[in-house]
Image (cartoon, rainbow, N blue to C red):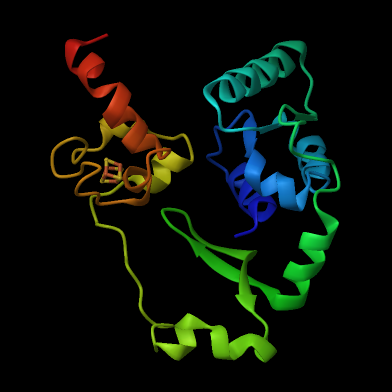
Length: 199
Ligand code: SF4
């Protein structure tokens, strides 16, 4: 997956409510963050490259909020111990040799042009989609799942009628409940009791 096209798709949507981004540090370790600079400028939105430790996240949020309060919209690098502006050039060259850029469907969001990777023809023998005949297999999200709106910041997980009942981390109905960093899974782990108590 390529992150900048997804950020642009979110920011250019008419119902966009996103005011700032924490860019994933592990992705930027390879890809760098030069591609984020024109996005921050065009959409007037702070983008902070951030690591994954709790203190990284807190500092990334703080840096984004400070930008918003100061009226700035820049790319900043909280994860400087791992990420360089240009990223890992040898890794990028290797990826360009093996993969080509294709449209890709993002769970809960839909297809975004030029946002994914597929193996180049010379590596087709390693392409699991072709080899196992699953290229046309689609796992559509449950009809009552609103994870697309949760991902875009339009709704909170608790506003989903399935949250914590029919949808839990053990039996997820949508993308944002599947992995622990997903918004619904995080709300389920840390907020569901507080939400019930009305706090
Ligand atoms: S709680 Fe489950 S069903 Fe509801 S939006 Fe989140 S992932 Fe989808």
